[in-house]
Structure formats: structure tokens, C-alpha cells
Image 1 (tube, rainbow, N blue to C red):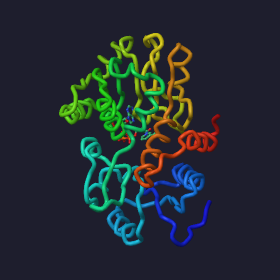
Image 2: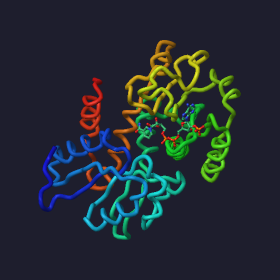
Image 3: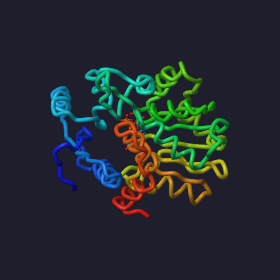
Image 4: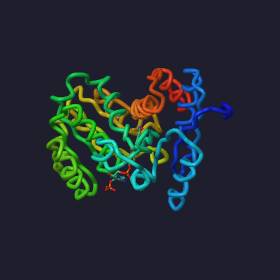
Length: 284
Ligand code: NAP
């Protein structure tokens, strides 16, 4: 890890817990690679100290930071402004010190859609898409999908009322359709892209699957936001049945790359960021 030198700019991530975060590794490597005098640190901030932590970061002259679980919503009350996408999503994962003060952005959704576009390209607007889950990640993903002109988006969630609330929330931008799980399951063969935004299948409960793999449309894209494990059981089983699979590393790198550019004005080397993350996760 590089040493903090005088005149280096300071960035970081706040969360709780945050010790497992790969962001310091990814961003510090990129700062070095770009010869930028900057340093990125993970700050473990308990929810009851969030306001104090924000004051402290301001006082210390931090130039920008990421926000992760559980602070993505609560942090908004301490900011001086919100980007339009963050407002629609109702959560912030990136904060930038600008002339008007601290402005909140959400780069999760665009980070995800960039990685999805590498699979589906120009077919996105015409694809029939199912999103499983209605939490913060689902909000970001659906907002970015509709921002990229996806017109057929269905949401389903264990707690159906949250899927309905998300449908309402997105209505100002696009028509998305909330379906109860049983009904959506029957429509599995009609979906071109199925995206899991729930934590089902994440380590340590790696034997669980968020959606049945029988009846998948031939050649469909099956995508999991999870990257630990790199290939969830659901992705493994879907691949055996001919699906084109996508894990969550592209989203993680994508959201970080957009944040990096917002902070520094420099487009990072995303291939290098991806390699750093994959090496740490034990992948290729
Ligand atoms: P969240 O706001 O807590 O939402 C969790 C969602 O998962 C809810 O829809 C919840 O359903 C559902 N869920 C949880 N346990 C379930 C179960 N046993 N069965 C069915 N549904 C279940 O969390 P989040 O922030 O959206 O994160 C969700 C996932 O996305 C996590 O795995 C996270 O690691 C991943 N993620 C990845 C990236 C990336 O960079 N790759 C970025 C952000 C998030 P209910 O509403 O019914 O509770």
C-alpha cells in the first residue's frame, strides 16, 4: 500500500463493514498507474457516527469518496446537491467535491449497464428483461436500463409490494412492469436477459439460486450482480443450459471507473482495474 504524502489528494470509501472492500486496491493501483499523487482508504463508519464522519471528511479536505452499505441512503441528508440519476434511484454511491459543495452521484447502474452492453450491444432496447429483486442495486440497474432506452423491463421480488413501489418510482422515466414471482416464473422462456440483483447465492450461502434455470430462452443472457463467488451456482447451471452468463465484476469495475473519472477528470484503464480485481478474487 502506498504511503500518504504531503499534497496527495485523499479519496476513500465509507461503509460498515468495509474491510473486505476491493475498492482501495483497485483505485490505489490506478492512481499509481496514472502517476496521480492520490490515495484511497477504506473508512469503517458505524451508522450512528455517519454525520460526524462526514464532518470529519470535510474538515480533513477529502476530495471525494464512495459510499457503500449501509450508508447509501442516509448519506444524502449531509450533501449539498444530488445528481438527477441519484435522485431518481434514491441512493448515492459516489460523492464529489465540486464548486457547489459535496454532490452525490450513483454510478452503480451505469457501471452495470456498461458491462451488460459488452454482451448485448445494440440489442438492449429491444430485449425483454427480467430484474429479480427490488432493493438498492435493482433501483440503480433499472434506472440505468431505462436510461439506455430499454423498453421492456419486468421487476419481480420476494416482497411484491417493493416491486410495485419500484415500478411507481420509475414511472416518471419509463413504463416498467411489476409481476408477482409465480407469474414471472411462468414467463421465464420469454426473457432475453434475466438479472439477479438479490444476494441469493452470495458467499457463504453459495448453494442457493435466485431463479429456476429450467425453461430459459435458448441463448438468453443470465446475469448476476454477485462476484463472490465469481460464478454463482445459478450462473453455472444456466451456462450448462446454454445461457450466456455475466457476473458482477464488470459492474464493480464499471462503477469504480465512472467514480474515478468524476474525481480526477481522467479516464482510467478499466482493463487494468478488472485484472487487479480478478487477481484478488482468484479469477483469470
Ligand atoms: P438490498 O437493498 O438489501 O436488497 C436486497 C434484495 O434481495 C431485496 O430485493 C430482497 O428482497 C432480496 N432478497 C434478499 N434475500 C432474499 C431471499 N432469501 N430470497 C429472495 N430475495 C431475497 O441490497 P442491494 O444493495 O440491492 O444488494 C443486492 C445484491 O447486489 C448484493 O448481493 C450485492 O452484493 C450486489 N451488488 C453488487 C454490486 C457490484 O458492484 N457487483 C453493487 C451493488 C450491489 P425483499 O425486498 O423481499 O427483502
